[in-house]
Amino acid sequence: MPIINVDCWEGFSEEQKQEWIKGLTEITVNLFNIPPDKVLVLLREVPLSNWGQAGTAASDPDFLSKSRITALPSK
Image (cartoon, rainbow, N blue to C red):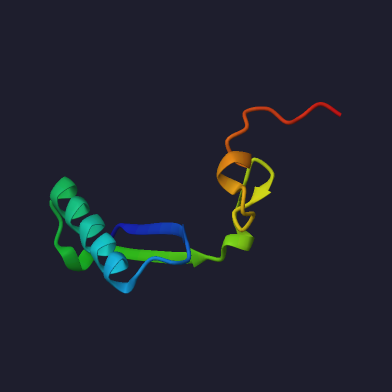
């Protein structure tokens, strides 16, 4: 039985999450030729303050620009 774990930010609507689960299930069923009841999808929503990239928390208002750095600044 495939178990698909998805860690994501909070904020997706219930409709979006349902479509996501449905899509992941359909892709897995078609790829591996297994019945849908053998596919388990877990969405784990993480608060933005608990998610970071490039040394910046996702809750930072400038996260998009700060998280795109490719090298840490020299000290």
